[in-house]
Image (cartoon, rainbow, N blue to C red):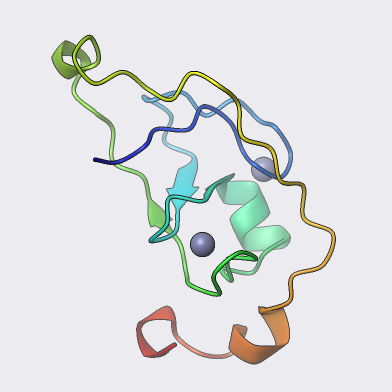
Length: 93
Ligand SMILES: [Zn+2]
Ligand SMILES: [Zn+2]
């Protein structure tokens, strides 16, 4: 089940379930659209994959499957996958 993280792991911007700015990689690393475009250039610093828009969980299901409660913070200093993947389409990495 998808883990809904509540903030950008880089800049800390709030990304609640209903946010349209939450982006995730295949491992659910979560960043805001601004960081994905202007800091990460669509290269996840943890796995090298690309990002897609995070789906919003329907409100009625939040009571059963709540968002992740603790905040996840991994500010990006060096993106070790940037050089390798910046010019390669995420579907081809
Ligand atoms: Zn951010
Ligand atoms: Zn990742």
